[in-house]
Amino acid sequence: MNLGSRRTWKVPRANLVGPGAAAEFVGVAFAGKGQHQDVGAEMVHLAPRTCSRIANHGIVQKGGRATLRSGIRVATGATEVSSSVAWSSLMLDADSRAQTSPSIEVDEADAEIVQEGTVRKVGEEMLFYMSSRGLPADEATRMVVLGIASEATRRIPVEYAVEVDRLLELELEGGIG
Amino acid sequence: MLEIKNLQVKVAGKEILKGIDLSIGPGEVHAVMGPNGSGKTTLAQVLAGRLTYEVTGGSARFQGKDLLAMKPEDRAREGVFMAFQYPVEIPGVSNAYFLKAALNAIRKYRGLEEIDAMDFMGLVQDKAKLLGLDETFMKRGLNEGFSGGEKKKNEVFQMAVLEPKFCILDETDSGLDIDALRLVANGVNTMRGPNRSMLVVTHYQRLLDYVIPDFVHVLVDGRIVKSGDADLARNLEKHGYGWIVEEAPKPQPARA
Image 1 (cartoon, rainbow over the protein chains, first blue to last red):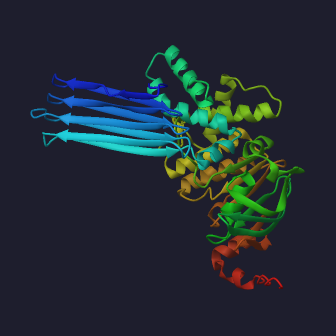
Image 2 (image 1 turned 45 degrees about the vertical axis):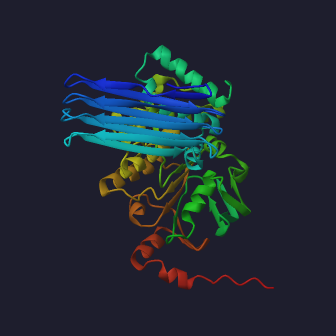
């Protein structure tokens, strides 16, 4: 979970050394005015039958920028590896930017690597849909952002998740920074 | 309930609706049919409050209030509901959470207390049964990864929970197989009543075999060119739109 600070660069790496080892990274980055979130993860498969997953979500508003990184490396001898990378970017306005920087390096032919990505705008259509059910635009935007973040927040203890949701709400209102 | 007078609408600078007159009384079900590009969806969306559509003339009054001056959320709170032709996916926001928030926003506006979680679950289970939806459905993300049919069922399900006074169904029958169509039609029919009106927008007679309209209007090139009862829809199914287009009076060119 990445919030605040002008420039964040955070790309943790997992080395999968033991046969059958598994690693997962789920990240949510929020970039507001003047902020650049450059985040992601690297997975290095060094042993057979290892598997990894990266889920990386970026939310940008008010000119904020997100770079979503992912690196998958499958070393010689690491057979039957499976790995999936998913990223999504949510743009709250047209002034903001989101980009991805994926890299895949595979030395074993039987590795299964899946990559998918989406860019969504909290666009006119999304807001119209939600407002046509009685919800005002700010409430609708809040819901969409917390929905994206929920892939990460639902895995952490509820006390912490509540705090993260609150921080995201403050970011949206422009209460921080 | 709804009075539309000479409604004219532009979308992206292009004139789509060229003067619609339509009066819908309490409890009435009106069908609007017409070929592709005739303005059916525009009419539905402009009534629900789509802001990118520019109203250039005319009026629409809902229960005596100026509908076109209201924000979309206020229209919903007043009791207008549109079942979307293409419902939007909102990942990570559960159906239950969204629907509860929507219901409470509407209740608050009407001066009612927020519904508590137990009552809400009870209400939702009753309505879900009506449409043959199972329990896992409520926990899934709003329209996230739903099939076309599930999305359409969800629209009618939301409608059943929110209990609007005026329902707009925008091509709710498209993308439904025959079993799903029956379930959806059954859901819609259950909601018919003396105080609830409906505007059913559709290409085909199909849905109207189950949801029998009181009135049928044919929209061609932004104008209602013919109105009638349910028989008109059956005639259209047999003979197509061609004969009406030819029969319709040609718009007179404006004098210089």
